[in-house]
Image (cartoon, rainbow, N blue to C red):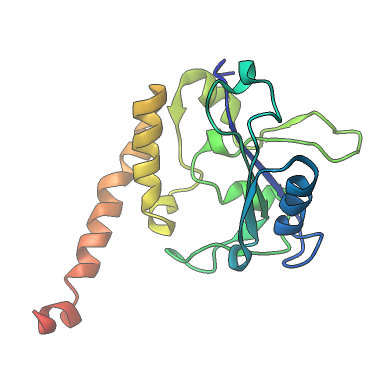
Length: 189
């Protein structure tokens, strides 16, 4: 795909919020087996396991740190809200991602689809074309930081915003400006 080494992996599933079958529990099990450091964020159903350098050969990772994020499927209750762990499907979780290239998944569960790339939103096409396309027109209202993440991906990987995605940026910035100009803000000035 990008033919670049990666040291950052995300695992998503229907984890429990607490206990050994939670994201933190799985990351803790990896730490117990291989060492490393775990940072858990129970409120979001996520944990990050930073592997020790010996887990994978340095040829694959270079000198960079290897990180695995384990998180529950999640949803957003309203635009601008923080994500919450939810008993949703993988498809629902992928649909709420920022860009189509980040809505790709590889099936690792022991079933007939094991090893199959799940691409419901043409992410492989956009990856081949180096395009950043939001998942839905209200994406930047849901999370305005997606604009910054897109700019960072663009600078780092040479991707370009799809024209329809780029057209949404000024509207999202305009919405933020209108929110600042509400009467409550003017009265406090």
